[in-house]
Amino acid sequence: MTTESKKRKTFIIDTSVLLYDKCAIHSFGNNDTIIPIAVLEELDRFKDKKGVIGENARYVNRYLDNLRTQGSLHGGIKIQSGQKIKVAINGFKKVPVGLDPDQVDNQIISLALSISKNNNNDIILVTKDINFRVKCDSLGITAEDYHKDKVVLEESEFYRGYVDVEIEDGDIINMLYEDGNSDSSIGVVEVIEEKIGRNLHNNEFISIKCGSQSFLGCYFNNSVNKVSKSEDLPGLSFLGIKEKNREQLFALNLLFAEDVPLVSITGLAGSGKTFLTLMAGLSGLNEGRYKRIVITRNVQPVGKDIGFLPGDINEKMMPWMSPITDNFRQGLKDKDLTYFKTMRDKGQIEIAPLSFMRGRTFADTFFIVDEAQNATIHELKTIITRIGENSKIVLLGDVEQIDTPYIDSLSNGLTVVGEKFKNEYIAGHIQLKKGERSYLSAVAAKIL
Image (cartoon, rainbow, N blue to C red; front, side, top):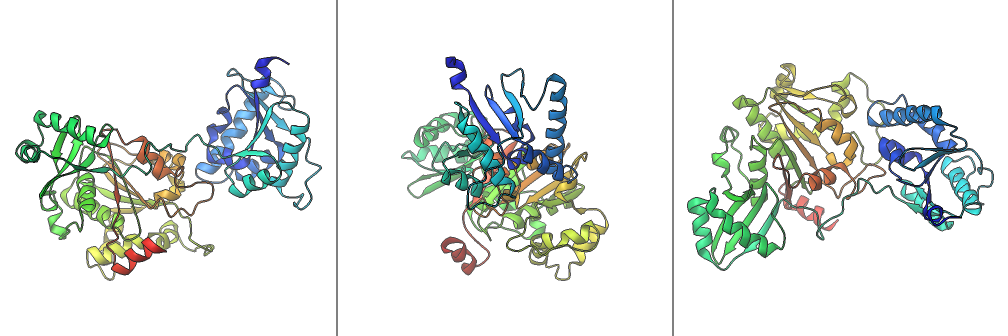
């Protein structure tokens, strides 16, 4: 056996990986990739499903069908990258004692055990299913998560969208108040970056303190600009809205920035994510900057599902839109939702299910994705690529409250978007850290 062949690995791919990312089938480099026949059976059950999952299942099936023109999937087909793709049909007979032989995961385990006896390569089973990985490890099978979309944090915490800096020279703050949006702030940028030990990101906010002096700024293109007060933001005054903390002020500045079409806001329950975003959207609608507000979310229930919901699409989505209607009642004093219903009848507010985004274009739109932490990066990519001219998309969520299987705080779409876009001039991110719903809500979010 050659040295080159010893370096090859054999990856056994679970259904969850292929449904999560259709391009996963291309992602294993100069190695052997085995797709169990039971996985093809599962893919067949998902091919008619709407949304990203159904699309992924169909893509994998079509790709494998095209490969058949190059050889036999039974024997294995080597593609240009050096990767060899094979569909395995043997090795499903001896399921370990204690495991249900009719369960697909357990059949794949038996396949992995069988292959490992007759193969000198490293055998690695790749799955998004946590329990599947635990079972594999218990049986001595190497199992890994699919890491392609997982972010690697540069620091010990998620990107917050702002930094706190203490300086010794009060003249710097005086200069920023006098000339905070000109080239004279370049020297200030160097001081700040030396303090924090890294480069600032575009649209990152800065809280600068020197003794009793302070300055709130935002970095953009090697310059520091003064943060706008809420009363200076166009169209916000008619709603009577004012920030309750500096992070909310940062969020409002991003929400009203016409040159920042992508905004992501994270924060614990009651921190004001949905409220501030909805008010910004209504302000933009009132000022004529947008023609409509479109709202969507991943319909992932907390706890037991309530089952089938009757009615048309709007009626089916209403239970998931309760956070929006609650904010209408609170922010606009629309107790019986008359204003909300009128806007929906006029087409100024639209509720759009996540699974019906393909082929649409949203121009002149303020687009809100609520509970975005429950969406995969592939689902959010589908939405973000639908955004047209003169539109803004806002992603909201709490990355510590994920209800969707197979994703976590590092691999969910909201985290990935915030990290990957953090230095793009067209995007901004802010983390709201204080709960403002009530004192009880803030304490519960912290200690429970």
